[in-house]
Amino acid sequence: MKKMILRCVAVLMLAGACYPAVAAVNLDRTRIIYNASDKSVSVMLENQSKELPYLAQVWLENAQGEKITSPLVALPPMQRIDAGQKSQIRILQLPETAGLPKDRESLFYFNVREVPPKSDMANVMQVAIQSRVKLFFRPAELRKLLKADWQEQLQVSRLSNGLKLTNPTPFYITVGYLGKDNKGNASGFDSVMLAPFATESLTGSQYVSDRYSLGYMDDYGGLQVNQYHCPSVQCQLISKDDKR
Image (cartoon, rainbow, N blue to C red; front, side):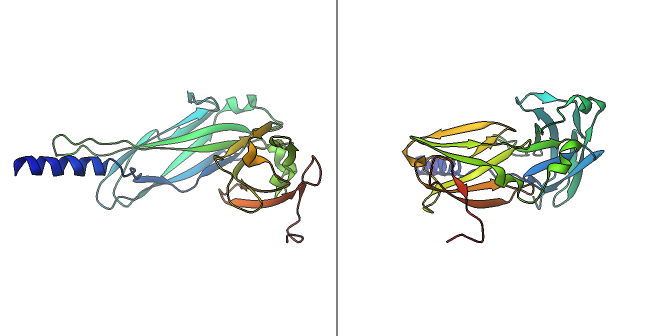
């Protein structure tokens, strides 16, 4: 009987390991746009646990994933959030932002790590879950270039073994969906973030077509899907009024 109980416990432990951990502390957005004209940007954190308080540790990283405290800083770096409560984080720009490029966006990452309270039970493994979202610092000089659906300037070109994406804008463009012939996402495609004025080639038979569906992430984290037709090497954006 004892062996059977131990065996059942082992099975339950293995089964439990198959379930992904769910974050208790969550952000109110999936990306952050920081306009240079703003002195600060506020991000809301919510502890969605109905029972336990959590500590929330926050920090910023540069495009290379290195932790930074300049030219942007997130405050407070650590705070307690009670069960079911919300708390605000302020991201401030320091004078060093004057040294950032004026002709394009700069990429940073905002990180949140939740720290659960210490368990009273022995031999309990606790997991500190970390969330990470992109932060785009947008220079004031780019404001005049902003217009509705500016991501539609993304250029799509056919290759003999795939396709090429060209970003002619000073903004970051994240392609979160890519399909062909309206048959769903291309096999193996995850997402592609194109830096300002950058080009990315995707090769493989799954990317060869004369018609593509591309979904880009807008400033609010929503997925906007556009259709492209490729009568030649250069593909053409199909107007929303002309979609068939």
